[in-house]
Image: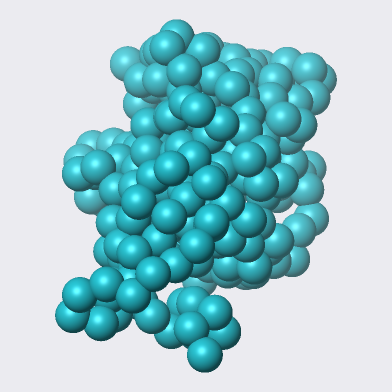
Length: 249
């Protein structure tokens, strides 16, 4: 039995998907979500085999859901979208299947057949979502909110409130106003989400918000010591000196 998550903000759209799924007895609905935040929580809680993911959703869009879960951890995904030229080009470029609203039962059945092939051939049968996410991140403006897990709930953070970021194995720790949040993300990925106008990478394991830098001091070996307004002392590696070149003239 294939357990599926239906993530679509339109109740009538979810109702139609439920009717279409009645013709496929090998599929059961594990959960439904009416926005991106609910979709993230449902994926974490239910670990569905397959996600039917609407791109245009409130709170967090479909790409934001993938960012929050992580492309490597995201279950096999069929995308649903109204006409979106960029999204369609991106899906086709990466050989990912999608359903363009409105779609008929035949197209829906064909998409499910492809999903069954992914599932039967193991996870590697689906094209990776990571290249798609990188393309989307490069083409759109940085998000005005970050979704992070805090205990058993999810909360939104304003990127401007993030003071600095440090790498911790496969995670990053966001330092925000006297507290911190651990997020499963790479340093490159979180920098793309934060944007480079305010944030700069100063070390392979550190990113700073320029608004929270107190001062810089020359250090050993061509490095600099960066003192943050919260008192934290970080290293500006000479490898990353060009990131703060205008400050070091």
